[in-house]
Structure formats: structure tokens, C-alpha cells
Amino acid sequence: MTDTPGTLPGLLAATVERQGARPALISGDRRLAWDDVAADVGRRAAGLAARDVGPGDGVALVLPNDVEFVTTFLAAGHLGAVAVPLNPLFTVAELGRHLAGTGARGIVTTGALRPALAAWAAEAPDAPAGLWVADVADLPSGGVTPPPAATADGPALHAFSSGSTGTPKGILRTQAQLVAEADQFYDTVKLAEDDVILSVVALFHAHGLGNCLLAALRSGAAMVLVDQFRRDAVLGAIEHERVSVFPSVPFIGHTLGETRRAERADTRSLRLCFTAGAPLARATYDLFGARFGVPLRQLYGCSEAGSVTINLDGDADALAGSVGRPMKGIDLVVAGEDAAAPLAAGETGEIAFASPAAATGYVGGEPDAGRPSFAGGWYRTGDLGHLDAAGNLYVTGRSTLFISTSGYKVDPVEVEEVISGHPAVAEVVVVGARGPLGDEVVKAVVVCGPDAGDPGGLRRELVARCGGRLAAHKVPRIVEFRDELPRSPLGKILRKYLV
Amino acid sequence: MDTAAIDAQVRTLVAERLRLADAALDGPLDPDASLPELGIDSTGVMSLVVGVEERFDIEVPDGDITTANFGTLRGITGYVERMLVRR
View 1 (cartoon, each protein chain N blue to C red):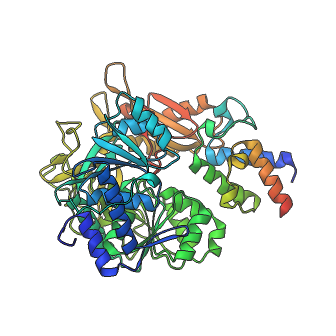
View 2: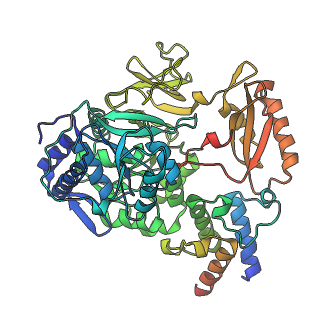
């Protein structure tokens, strides 16, 4: 099986050959060695093949963070099929919206979710014809393991980018691109087979898939699978399984940092903790570091390419605000209006990179053909940032969120900074709402702090504050108060619900 | 600490941690209003739990984070009261 370089089955075979007897997956009382994983993947591949899954066919994974996610994902890869991982907390309608257009032949899910999904598949007009829905426990698992049918250039993953436009964009990545991502992380972070990766971030998302699953598969490290963030479960797993690598999101880092009983847990095995998915506040960095004695670092990535940069700098305190330097094998620039000319250190522009792990386009083409995201081997992220003189990247905003109003472009972050300086404001997001003339109107959505007082009075104060600090076209015309901001499971603010 | 005092402190926590200020609700928060129905998701509940631990100097184990204990203001107040008695 090692004659399949650049593929997921090739990666699994190499790890099994090197260290088949070492621990691979730990979930509660279940412990699988890499040999066991290979055997499970073989049986599961036979089960999927019995359901007519072959090269290029889509298989949706609507599964929690558990052993079955890993083995089903790798079984699909073994067959050269396309895994379509989806959030098990989605409503059936949301799952359907994502599945339409993926060409999925079937859905592998849990016994609890199967009935609702089966009903949807039988009744919904937009459900792919002949779509089967299987409880992962009922997949036939006998039979002879089919030989690996993966090819390096074949599609292996159908992911989605939430983007800023509200419509999820489909992204197909090949076996070779996933292997390249695994190699980049391995070469940059220097994982070893005795590392233990706590896998509490969602495996259906790029963060968990890349930095837990692919990272373990490439290095032979063990994954400790935890389905939901619960503090005692996480602290217990760190202590009992001697977790060394802990990928998280800022919310998890902050909550653990605030949890006093964390000091009673033996967490000395932690050596690398990092967040992704949302900016890391300095307060969270400080809390976590004080509690665990390990710096909470930042990783920057996207569904289009997996992980792109990570901050491994020796001076973690000084560089806490940076997402670090590009992974090995990635060329990254900050580009101005002329994408061909990278900007100098300190200048803010759009982050763009070239990576063998990146997809080469969106399913169904570019949403904005006049300004393609993928061109000439580069991917323009739409994120704004700058590099320091040493090459550390700082992400400061998203260029695609610029609001077009009165013939000007408004950077919402700039307006947000002015409003958030008011003591009564807890959180603010500035978006472009549709204006009467088809253009956009600057709109601020404000979450008040506990002592905000009268909303009418505050609205007037905020507008006056902006008027005193910003050009007139940047002053919000609409100020809306909300109890909280809508967020994705990773904590990203869902701006589409605010316009 | 009596029930009224606990209730007042929990209300402050809800306002601070969940930003459910009374003004945003057009009046004081109904003690039996479902927090999930007010848009409080599991991350919001977790944030509230950490605040309760700090404010009342108690520990809330994972298993106690249930809808009965943390789904309404009344549920939280009752839970805190029981934990303080047990301490």
C-alpha cells in the first residue's frame, strides 16, 4: 500500500508501517493503535464500496468528534471518494443546503440523527436522487478490503467557506493537497510520534481536520477525541492522556483560563497550545498563560488551504498578537491594489499566498469573476494584514467587508474601533446595509455593556463620537442594539445576519 | 445569603456575561424565561457558569450544567442556593 504516494491511504500506510502498535485514537475507554485504525478503515471501505461508493463519489459525514469520523474519512479517502464533512448541529435544512451540489451518494451519520436525515432525503425536492442515509453502526463492515483507489490528483474533500457573502462556497481539495497540508504542519511544528493531540475542535472544520486529524496521520501522534467542550472532560483528558498539543479556539482558551480548578489538574505535559478561527484577545492570552504556564499561540488558516501560518516565536509575549510566519512550503505576501507588487513591512494590504495545499478554485466558479480569489497560483484571502520586519503576520481585518457608500470605501474595522471606545459599548460590528439607491449604508450593530442606560441617548452619543473622529461618510446612519452577536461554532461573527 | 440577594447577583452576572441588559428586554428578565430562547447558546451558558463560580466561590462540575440548573434565572438561583448550603 505504500505505492500510493501523495494520497491519504499512502500516508496511513506509512504511519502503520513505522509504528502500527503505537496509540492512534483515544475516545473515553476506547483505545485504537494505528494497526487497529488501518483494519477499521479497511472494513469501513468495504462497507462503503458495498454501497457503490467509488472514486469521485461524495460521502457526507455528519458525525461527532469520535473514532468513526476518523475511520470513515480515511475509508472515503481509501476509495478515492470525496468526504463532505458537515456540522452535526446543523438543522436538516442547513445540511440540505450544503449537500445540494456536492453530488453526495450517501450520508454517514449517527443513530440519533439518521431518522430526520432519512426523512429529509426521502421527501426534500432538492435532495440528490438515490441518496442513502446510514447509521455508522449499521454500515456493513464485512467483506474484503478493496485495494486503494486514491490518486494524488483526485478530489478527496469537499469543504465550505462561510465567506462574507452569506452563501457557502464549495471548495474541492485533492488527496495531494491534503497530504501537502499534513507535510507543511509536520515540517513546521515538528510533531513527533509521542505527541498527544487533544481533538476537541470540530473535525468537520478545517481547524480540526488539519491540525488534529491530518497532523496525527502524518506524524503518528495520538488523537484524544472529545466531542464537546466541557471543562472537566478537557482537563481530565490533558492530565490522564498526557496531552502535549492543544488546538483550540479563543473561547475555549478564555474559559479554561478563567477556571480556577484548572490549577489542580496536572497539565505539565502541554507544550504547544494554539487557537484559530477568530482573533485572540490579549486578555485571553494573559489568562491562559497565567493559568497553564504555556503561551497560547495563534494559527491562521482557511477552508481553501488549511493552515497557513503559526506563531512559534521564542518571544511569545511580545508577539502574542501575531499569527506568526508561513508554514514551510507556503509563499505569503501582503499585496496592494496591484497584486503583483508585494507591499513593504508595516504596510497594510490583502493577505495572499501560494501553497501546494490550497485548492485551485471554487466549485461552480468564482463568486466575483471580476476579482477572482484564485489566480496565477495565488489565493487572495480577502483578509487584511501586515508583516513586521521579521516576517510575522498580523491580521487586522477583511478587505471584502469594505462598505461601499457615497462613492467611498469604508473599512468597518475603523468605525468599530471608534464605537468600541465608548465605555457603554461591549461589542460592535459595522456592516453595509442596503441603501435606498442600491448602495450601502454604514450600519453599526451594538451590544451594550451592563451600565449602558437609555438606548436613545447612547445612539446619539455614538453618532456624535463618530462624527468627531471620522469623515462624514464613515459615520453610521443606522445604529441597532442587540443582546448578542450571531456567531459560528468557531466564534466568527456571522455578519450576514446583521445587514 | 438569601434568595433575593442571590437573584440580584445572578441578574448582574447575566447582564455582564450575556449582555442581556434589562433595557434590551423592555423590562426585568422574567425568572422563568428560557435563556436558550433568548438566544443564549452553549458558549453563553459556559460563560455564565464561569461567572457563577467566581462570584459565589463554588465549583460547578460538568455534569451540573443542565437545562434545569442553567436554563432560566430561577434555575440558576436555586442551584446556587443549594450549592451554598452544601458548602
